[in-house]
Structure formats: structure tokens, C-alpha cells
Image (cartoon, one colour):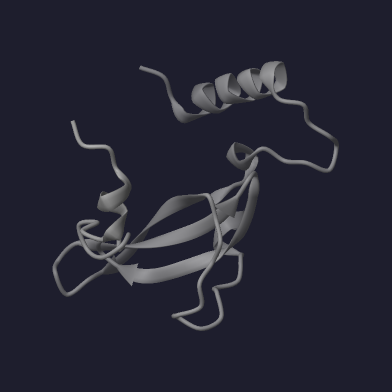
Length: 109
């Protein structure tokens, strides 16, 4: 079984081989949890955040459901933008369980 350091090293090798990287650019896998936690929270709870991926940061806070809460980092490209939530025990993507309008756009088999 591989440990986290071996996986990070492998990801860096793949990145260096297949992705061009300038000095100023950082690979998202190079950020530490502390750097993610230092990001500001988005302003208003209802303020939309345009991103293409999320990083899930488990917390030690328990939700009333009994599950641990999750904190999310919004990412665009290789740039972390801000933290989102921190008080949820579920992913709300188009509603809990994802039952939203996105299903209309999925090709059914």
C-alpha cells in the first residue's frame, strides 16, 4: 500500500511530465491542509462561487445528525479560491442527493 508521500511524489512526476508549469504556478496537490484552512470563507452564504472542483476537508465538528461536518475549498484550475460551508454533513449539489435539473442533461441508457 502506498502512503500519502509516495502518492504526492507520483503526482508530481506525472505533472512534471505532462503539464507545463511556470515558476509562479503551483499544482493543487502541492498545497497543504494548513494553506487551505488559511483561505478566507466566501462572503455571503448565498454568494455563488465559480469553480471547477472542490476539495473536501474533514472537520472534527459533529453535525446534529451525528456525522462529522465537512469544509470545502473551491478550486478553479490549480488555484484555491475560498472556503465554503464548514457546517454540512452532506454534499448539496443541486439539492441533497443531487436531485436537481442536471439529470435532464445526462444521456439515459
